[in-house]
Length: 127
Image (tube, rainbow, N blue to C red; front, side, top):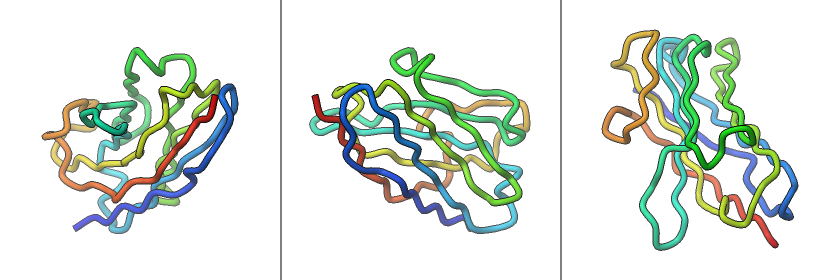
């Protein structure tokens, strides 16, 4: 069983930066691929970024490439999402998720591939 708790969300002006964190419980964190998803009001939840269990392999949605960076600290059981050059369209609830089934070199991008989810943290970008 893995529990995920997001933090670091808030209100930021367009062009600003924010880093959200996801703390995971359990020893299996370092063997889990991790992902960040987001859901804006009236829209479906979508993948933002994902990382292999080692952190070497990453994936980014086209909408955030060059602006967002996913990283992880396996010693702290924590995954981060650094968000720069934020835009109003980045406003959403951001969720982290853990995938314990994939191999160490695989970066899952689909919601059904993830086994555990956090409750989310709100990020609001004002224009």
